[in-house]
Image 1 (cartoon, one colour):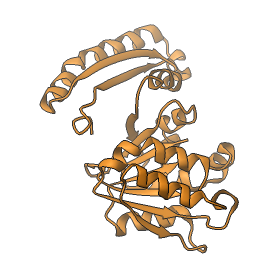
Image 2 (cartoon, helix red, strand yellow):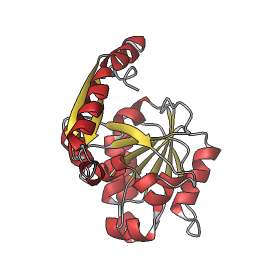
Image 3 (cartoon, rainbow, N blue to C red):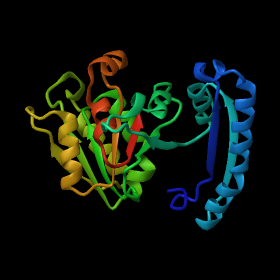
Image 4 (cartoon, one colour):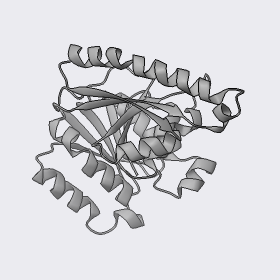
Length: 242
């Protein structure tokens, strides 16, 4: 990804100051050992960047994980990280980076541990006329403009967010940016997450672009929803914006 955009890639390891570390008998020693090990990975990161012919830097920061990532991401175009899973296939804690996404400092690309390498050239885009789906599409424009295939999966037709000229405005905006796409309407009886997973497989997409937490974030975390389902079950990278 960095090579395609000739981007500068910053790798970072956070030395987390959380309650589990503070409760240890010698927390400062533990933190210092972890920080020393993190700094030793600098050479490994430099070698990876040279191998891919990209510019990169390695950073080690200490602090509350989510806060450190949110602060650093405020000067990044996109934040990339893992979407780790438990043995049950459920995204662990809905992923730290997904929680950082709630601060809206930058879009996030979450890559599942079991995902195949992705070129992000065949994109599935979730659209329902909402502000969050609009922000996701706008943030993903550099990828959409370079994609070989873009499929728009449009849901919630006839509801408040897709009334009036929402679809026409999106089509016009994509046209102005020379984005060529296929438009697929989601059947009213289909659940958005299941439809997105199925459409991604059918169209052989290698990444999904979608807005995250379109409902109340507390409700979605507690009751489930499209974002949570995609985090738990998607086997390909998710480009998310909140």
